[in-house]
Every structure is written in C-alpha cells, then in structure tokens.
Image (cartoon, rainbow, N blue to C red):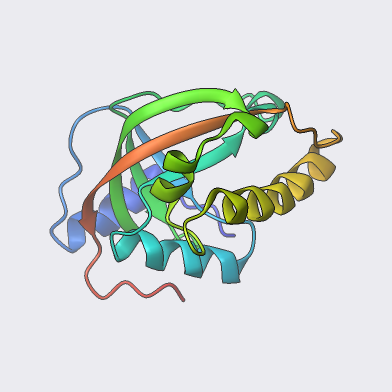
Length: 159
C-alpha cells in the first residue's frame, strides 16, 4: 500500500466537498492485500461493516497508539487514496478467543458468523504475527474497534 500523508488525504477530501470533523484524525486501512482491502472497503461503503479488529502486538511493535472513542478515521484503499471517513464509537481490548458473535456480526464479513470471523482473522493475525516475530495464540490480545460511517468519497473506487 502507498502511504499517503494526512495533509494529502485531507486535501483530497476537501476537493470533493468532504469536511472532516474535529478530533484526532488518523489514516486507516483495512486488509493486508489489495484484494482484501477492496472487499472490506466495499462492505464499509455498503453499510455492512461497522467494526475492525487489530492485533495489540502490532500496535506495540509499531509504537502506534490504540484507537480512542471519538477518533476520526480517513479510510484509505491499498493505493493510499481516501475512500471514506469514519468515527470510532467503541474500543475494547480482549483475547482473540473472547471475541463474541455480536462483535463478529458488527464486522460484517463473510456470513457474519463468529466461526467465519475467527477463521478469517486467525489467518490475517497469523500473517501479522509472522511479520513482527510473534506466534499467534488463542489468548493474544486484539483491539476491537466499532465505528460509524460519516462520509463516503463520491465515485471513489477501490482500485
């Protein structure tokens, strides 16, 4: 993925008439491949996906702060282009095996089931763990982040 700057993303949003509300603004991406990014962005744009989960170890490895309620996310696609604006409405850190069916449904992926969530996220977090030199475990901490969709960039494809 190309890494856009916050200033560039804000300028692109302003150019299409999207004002970003006040608050801590972060660039947010979904998926670890162009294909997964496209799929997840389409779910967000369609209103089906209203949560995302990250690996706490990855936040620590990258020295990246955890999301906070009220954060404004500029969702970027795998090419670094802004496609949507969100606001964080909930943040919970739990063990991977403690994620429940209600949260899995909020993520909106696959058939929305907890079984699908666990299988898909085990794969993604396995790759993330390998990248940072950790071994995945059922009790690894994950950051469960609920969000609301504030704006969709008009005619933004997911390239």
